Image (tube, protein in one colour):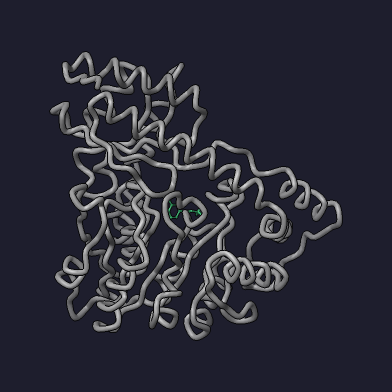
Length: 395
Ligand code: PMP
């Protein structure tokens, strides 16, 4: 007889839903000739100097544990990077933890600050991990829905309305995944006023900071009064094309870092030693490559936005990241139906917007971190798919 495990499992873990993105990957994986606009990762291979520095560190025998928060040399590079690039000042000895991706940084941030039932405001559409991570930490994710009329930006009024006595923190992500929306300095200042007024913390996911095309990126901790309230999260995955390395970091007030470090120490110990050497090299010597990648994404963004609008899928211009988030409402299909039919009929994989929260319904996420040739072919296929639905409108 098959053993029933249900009563062994934690309620929280059992109630987690598998990521809606995976479902489409699995479907696409079994098909030939699929162009994927589904994945949220750079199409570049990690620059050679980073790989070489890592190989050298293995050759030199750097195979031991490092200090729990990471090599001091790397933490120093991180603070000087944050200082030079984003004008925010941290102490490498007690304000930085090198983590297993931004993902682990978020996990320890939530676990360090949340008690059972504490609420965290999440601006949706949002990255799929936020709400589950809040739940795993015993908190309650509270969605704030944004809309395209407002460029998918959260307004101060919406935040005010969502705050209750249990609200402990708000998660901000600019540039955003999946919408690509960025918040400018003035908008951040307005949000900061509410945060101060209601004595909240901010988890600022700045993983796409290097991919902000139209405005200078503003790190939330630089906003007046916010340094002491911000857990800044960033990493190497996106800007440096290092997703598979699983390296990120957080920067925060020392008192918070001390608590997050305890969780990190007991669960992870430290990030892999040899990879930390690669990360030092990334922060020292990769700016030409980073700039080259930024320019290449920008060209592709402009192409995608122009072409999608031309074929009848309304698409706002995202200020950053490497996603476009066009409306598919004109097709009359739900976002799941659209993604599934497009995959089966034209072999293009996109992600249905509803996996990023209710307000993502009616949209699809297309990653443009793939070659221009692939993007052109994908858009030809999408155009054909739409024409078959009778809504093609060439200008
Ligand atoms: N935040 C956002 C908004 C993301 O899109 C991602 C990756 N898709 C992450 C965090 C996780 O990044 P990492 O690879 O550093 O764990």
